[in-house]
Image 1: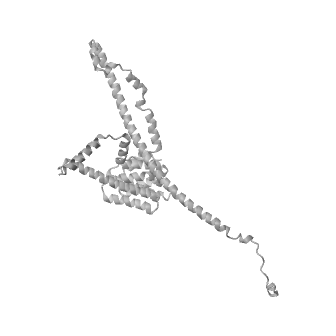
Image 2: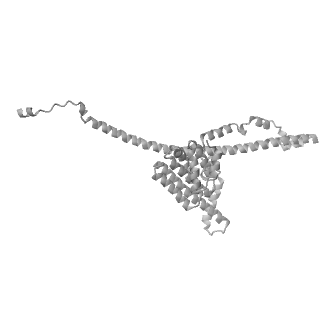
Image 3: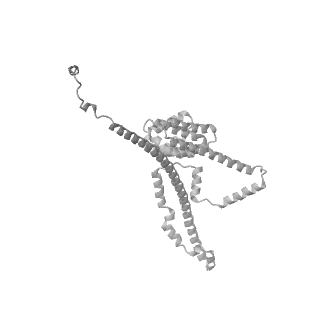
Length: 339
């Protein structure tokens, strides 16, 4: 049994050389009973990999999927929900037309060898096009930013004022948390989490700092003097000032530590929301694929039912079993000449 840390190490050593890809592919096939964990780590390491190594992850996936097709299909099934986002991520991150052609060719091979259904191939092709569009959009944004720092272009004043007002209107609107997460997922996709990982994170959030009643009671019990500077004038001597200073220091430490814990919780909740959103998106894609697959097989079943009904009708017009039929004996030669 291979651990997640061992998988991370293996993927960190992956390069685009044929030997590296084939070696890792054989290793993964040897542990194909852990296909879910392997695919999860594969996706996570793909996102964090350097740009020049990202395509190597698709090489490995392709090699594993094609070998697995003949051995059981665990990887074929488990890779499917991840491939669409992986294809879009690679194409949008790698600025190399040759790599783009390679990705397109791999999808074409999966189609030609019928590794995935036509609907899944269509989804992968759509993800490829989305990745290209995202790459072009990012390049345009970079070009606009560089133009902004360089020489100013001479433009029509009316168009400039219009674009400026649009930009102002844009900056005024604050994105909701859901919009931020969706945008973040589009820019930095995360691997589809394993169900156990989602459950574990949600359980951890149940015991979060925001639900720590003891600390909140301590903060609520702090005297008003620590938060109202107007009461400083009521201090009568140096001893009272020293006591209040110590109290303020204690309150400061308590609040500072609690704020740090709350910030950590906020980051965890944002990541949990992103994780759940990514999981929902992957499930939506899988549902769409399964629904189309179900519809396809329903049509096939309907055709089979029609053929069966036709056979039943045809059977009614056929004679009974020839072996059991009562056939009158043929006349003998004597009977024929007697007539």
